[in-house]
Image (cartoon, rainbow, N blue to C red):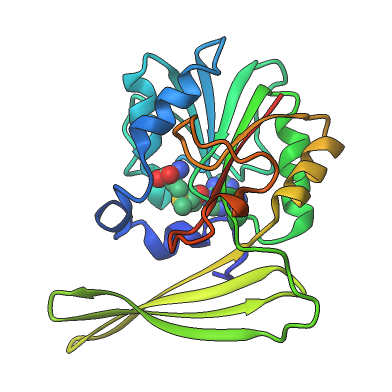
Length: 248
Ligand SMILES: C[S@@+](CC[C@H](N)C(=O)[O-])C[C@H]1O[C@@H](n2cnc3c(N)ncnc32)[C@H](O)[C@@H]1O
């Protein structure tokens, strides 16, 4: 399977996703935030995965239609979610769903080209009155930068270690990475790709599809307002800076 196949992320991570990422972002705070912006009580979650966020949304009394391209991820998602196996940039849904669409935890960046991200905005517009995105701010691409490769220790694991090897290409705004689980039994490679966008690029793609930016925060806590410059909110912090964008 190629890395740009929409099923590739699930192929790499479905086995380990819940163990590694169950607390990666605050699911309850996400659900409270979305519930306040969901007049029809129907959420369309793009890249629902194993249902980490969807379960918290359902606990808020919302109905969730969960799209995911990966049968491996969806198999692990509870049946209380209305699960649809599909590429989120080509949702097989009729216009007029009037949902609040949510694409959390950087999942937009799983679409590895500008064209596929633009397509997602255009395809979601007829289905959603509100679109909420959570994206990490990886900074503006540097046209002078060459491809940068890095290796790091992600975490120790029993009987071994997980190493990450990444290559960042500024001209394409992509990062190709591998999580390598190294133990005496051998090496398991979990490859992934992301295409990052700046908030200005997000706003431009959203605008071209007929969405206007209505709110922006730097966390799911609404007191953390970000204006148009989320990077400015955490000048000393080591945590990745996040933008929560609400389009209507
Ligand atoms: C980082 S996980 C997030 C899962 C879940 N939203 C959460 O926050 O725990 C990204 C999910 O997006 C799915 N995905 C990746 N590319 C996709 C695509 N083109 N269409 C639909 N789903 C996709 C993956 O299979 C995976 O389940």
